[in-house]
Length: 358
Image 1 (cartoon, rainbow, N blue to C red):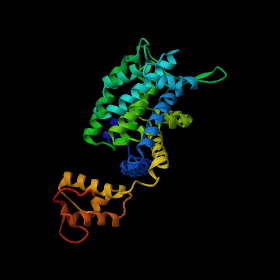
Image 2: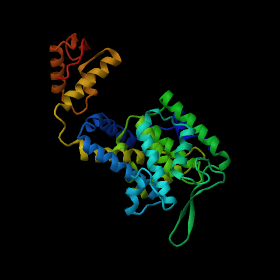
Image 3: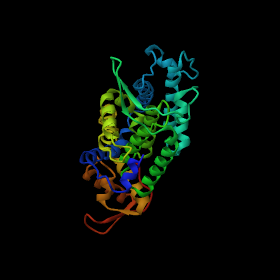
Image 4: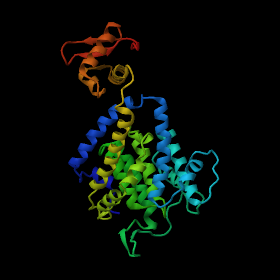
């Protein structure tokens, strides 16, 4: 491994692909609406969370040839103390438990070697090398129905896997500290590098998808809580493998093109948000939701910088009209909660008292 994809961004060798910029713009807009989406019916959101948890556990394992009989899914994934009939059931339940951990504690889970090994151990059950890097070299082999096969990709040798993972984790942290690229590009690049290193004998794909979920949460994109990213990957499995192969060619020499796979990851996230919007986001918003969004924006801006302009407030409230923003500001001004200092569109607004919620 000459260098990670992440390190290539630090060295300014890779310019952001035009399609990537388009995905980032759309995802930023969806993220702006995320709070509104999650104010929908608690019952509906709960149902989506429960359904996504099951779909994710089943789909991510099925991509790797690990499956559970449909009649057994609820017993394996919902029962507090399931009785497993085989290793497949154990691994699917382990993935479900790893998902639950991420859903619950994402904000406090470090992207570290300890976390990666724990995720692998959780998803592999009682097998002898659960939670351990590979001890033997293992390439990615594509097998054909007629019995033929080909080497799709030569992974990092077992002797170098631990060192390669350590470098990837260093670059991940540096990428965030030094802001080499936007977080979504970083997580997709990390995912590509992880899959090319292929640090485990088996279970790499499943761990990569759990890391994808964890890192997207930490970047502020929580759609995977309600819509199964793993199901969307399974439904586009051919494209997943195709873009992974395209972006892995020349990876060892640092001459690969990461954008096909990065754009695939971003496309999956966009598809998830679009589905989320169809299910709850664009349904009639709760009464007062837009007003609440403006009030929350006032709070955030006042806490961050003390003062703000109407334009800055509008940017924190995507989907809310300028008339609504002005109406809420006038209402709060009359109540003595905010004050306008200056005139014209560039005037500064400051918070003077408690924001009125009624």
